[in-house]
Image (cartoon, rainbow, N blue to C red; front, side):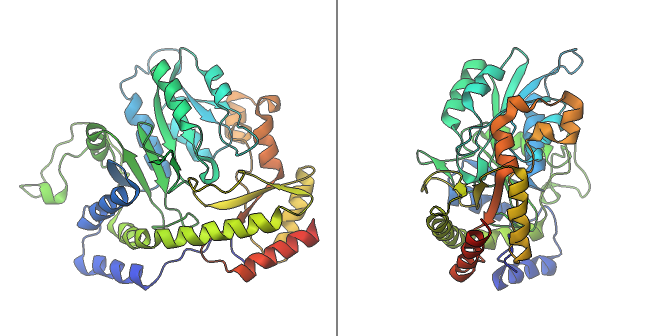
Length: 379
C-alpha cells in the first residue's frame, strides 16, 4: 500500500517522550517552551505559542481580535474567507461569533482571488482569513495592503505551508497571527497540535493567557500552590508536553523531510507533465513554497475524476482531495447562507476535478514510479 500519509517518527522522538513519563510533568512544563523557542528560531518568527491544534489557534486568533466588538448590534461582523480551504478556516470565524463571507479562488494555484476579496469588503467587514493553499503562498502582501487601507485584522491559515516564504519572509509573519498544523499527514507532526506565530509581544502575552482559561500563573509561577487569578476569558487550548516533545525532535528533521518532499514533487511533476488528460496545479516548482502534496486536475467532469481515484485505490495507491467541496457548498454553510455555484466556479472546478498525490518523506522513487505508471494506464 502506498499511503498518502505515514508519519516519520523514530527512536529520537520515542526517547524524548520517555523523559516526559519520567518527569511526570504532562502540562505547563519546560518542553512546550523549548518547542516554541526552537520553532521561532528555526523559521524566523518573533513569537511562537503552542496550541492543541491548528483549529484551536485559528479560533483563538479570531476570538481575541474581535472580543471587544459589541455582539448585541443587529448586524453581524464579517470576515472574508476563501471558499477553497479546509472547513476549519471558516469554522474558526463562525465559532468566534462572526460571519464568514466566502470568495472564489484563482484556478492556477487555488489561492483566494484578491480582486474578489476587495469586492467582498463592506462596512461590516472586520477581518480577513488568508490561507496558503497547498503550501503555495497567497498574495499576502497585497492582502495586507487591503487590510491596512480598510483597518482590518488578518489571520493567516498556514496549516500546510510550513517553511514557505514571500520575498524571504516566512508566511504567518505578515498578519496579526499565523497558525500551523502538526496533524499526522502534515510536513512534520506532534500527533496532533498547532503553533501560533505572532509579531507583537503584547498580543502574544494576551493569547498565552487566553489559551489556558485566562489563568494568570502556571504551576511553576504560583507562590502558593493552587492560588491564581483569572483576569480575562479563556479556553483550554494549550498543548501538552508529550506532543511538544515529539515536535522538538521533528523540528530537527524538518529540513531533511522537506528535501525529500521537494525531490518527490519534482519527480512527479516531471513525469506527469507529459501525460495527456491531466494538469498539475500550482505552476512551476518554487523555492519559496512549501511541499505538502502534488495536486493534479483530471480532464472531464467529477465522474471521471472519481473513476481515476477509484482505480488508483484499487491499485493500492492512497490519494486525497484538497478540498472535496468549496466550503460554502458544505451542508452546514449551504443551509445557513445558501449556495450559488456561479459565485465559486474555480473552487468547484478544483474540488470536482482534482486528486491530491502524496509526496511524503516516506515514499521512495520506485513507489512514485509505480504511481506514474498506474496513472498513465488509467488515464
